[in-house]
Image (cartoon, rainbow, N blue to C red):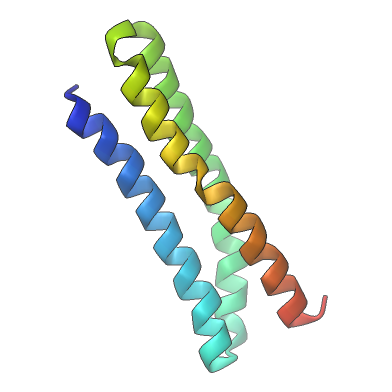
Length: 99
C-alpha cells in the first residue's frame, strides 16, 4: 500500500466518526429530539470496535511491513484523537439527559 492510502485510512476513519458524533450531539442540542441522543450512544457502541479494528489492522500491517510502520502509527494516532472527543461528548450527553 502507498503511504497516502494508509494516511487516508486514518484520516477518513477519524473524519467519519467525528462528523457522526457531531451530528448526534449538535442535532440533539439544536432540536432536543431524543433520537439524536440515542443515536449518539449507539454510535459509541459501534465506533469503538470499528476504530479498534482499523487501528489493529494498521498496526499489524506495519509490523509485517517494517518500512510502513511509521506511517501506520501516525494513521493510528489520528484515529486515537477521537477517544478524548468521544469521552467528552459522552459526558456532555449524560449531563444533558440528566442521567
